[in-house]
Length: 101
Image 1 (cartoon, rainbow, N blue to C red):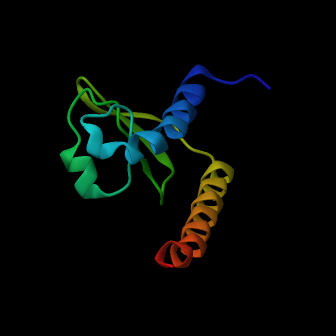
Image 2 (image 1 turned 120 degrees about the vertical axis):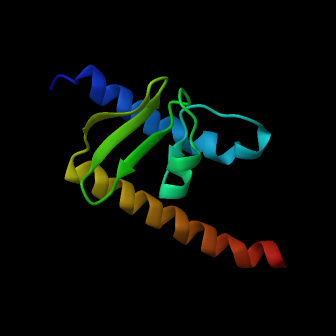
C-alpha cells in the first residue's frame, strides 16, 4: 500500500503533537495538537498546529497563511486515537492514587 505524502505529513504532525503539548510551559512550540475551539483561536499563523474536527474527521494545519484543510482522517484512525486517549486516561487515573501516598 502506498502512503500519500499528505497522509504521512498529517500522521507525523499528530505523532509529534503529544510531546509538544507536554512541553507547552517551556516556550513556543510548533506543530502541536489543538483540541478545542479556544486553542484554535489562540493558535498563531505559521505555528503548524494541527486541528482535527472529530465529528467530520477533517484535519487542518495552521500555516503561514492561516488554517488550511489537509485531508479527511479515516474513521479507523479516529477510532484508534480515541482508544489510545482512553487508555492514557485510564493509566493516569491508576497512577494518581500512587502519587498521593
